[in-house]
Image 1 (cartoon, rainbow, N blue to C red):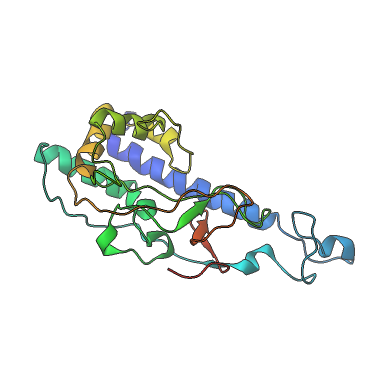
Image 2 (cartoon, rainbow, N blue to C red):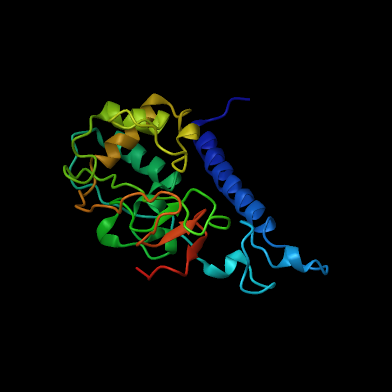
Amino acid sequence: MQITRHQWVSSLRRNVVLATCLTLSACVGSGVGSGGNDESKASLNPTGSPLDSPLDSPLDKYEQVTPVTLFDAEVVTSQYPVEQVQRGKYLVELLACGTCHTDGALVGRPNDERLYGGSNVGIAYSNPLRVQSPAIVYPANITPDDLTGIGLWRDEDLVRLIRTGVDNHGRRQLSIMPWPGYGRLHSEDAYAIAAFLRSIKPVRHVVPVAVEENQPNLAPYVHFGVYRSRQVSDL
């Protein structure tokens, strides 16, 4: 049976969400166990250092948040065919690109003035349940702003980033952006996404610099897009 593009993209999105949920469940399940009388085990966190009390959980420092996934970015100018831009808009919304790349969307409060303009809320890509200060990346500005976004990128550069994870400087992006799945996008679909992103309102916004593991972080972040650190001030 032949699968249509719509069915394939929908299946890809479901699989990404499912994989994220399964990963989160595994991390929660690997925390400090309950029950039994082994005080030496009950008093250690996953890194082996003492907890404040045997009942403490690594998740006590996090709160659950609900990300926003739907956005309506206006096309302000375009050199591309209307049908191509509309196809790109459909795909960008279907793949929920704005959830990571819109400021505040990861914690349920998107900034409408920064649609696709990059996020001040980062994503931890090392396990903050085992590392007190995880490595964090802040999703980029993907609007056509010349200074802080993709305004000076070629269409070919954007398509390569979408399908292979390699940016216009030849650097491979982390798979937090699920480019391994996007690699199966048809070429015309990848170019449609590029056409839409280059046709929306440019946003002048610099995102925070990525943070390496065990380094202090000054901006908020989420873990797997579900938990937000209580240790950092709010937006």
